Image 1 (cartoon, helix red, strand yellow):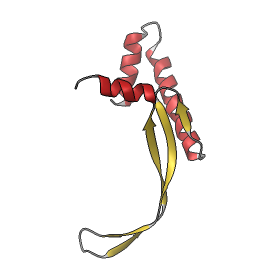
Image 2 (tube, one colour):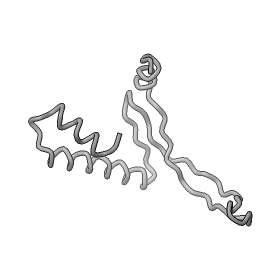
Image 3 (cartoon, helix red, strand yellow):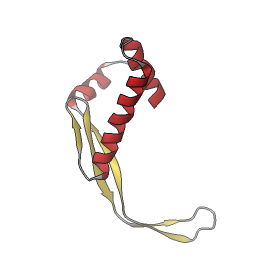
Length: 95
């Protein structure tokens, strides 16, 4: 699902809200979440899941074109762990 698809679904479920207001709300939500993660905070949404940062250690890699060794610096990556309710609902529905 893309951001625009999310906005369209919210508008469809809540026709009393203007498209502009829904767009602003979704963009603000994602902005606040990104700022929280960038600050090193974790985001916990009960029943849905937890977003947190994990440190990926520095490593050595290879350039696929010429095979030269390349240093890959340490970096933080976003990690998501599903909440109990989401995990159960994902596994209860046949695909």
